[in-house]
Length: 66
Image 1 (cartoon, rainbow, N blue to C red):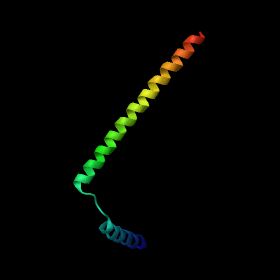
Image 2: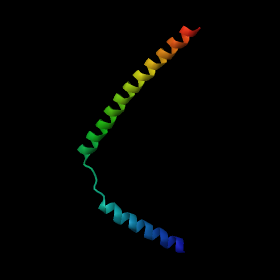
Image 3: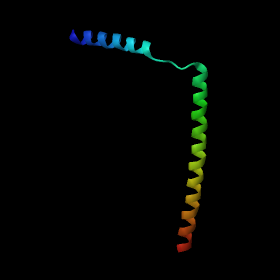
Image 4: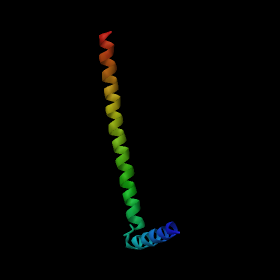
């Protein structure tokens, strides 16, 4: 029965803490999501460009040796 008491205490503490949370507005959430999406796309393009360039360079170097 002590476990049930611990669970009740835990849930009441969670409820109290959730009341203290400062939730973002919908517009803040949408603008933050766009920032993340654009950042991921830019990083993907940069990383893809480096990967492609180094792949071509290594292929060129290995082809020269044979």
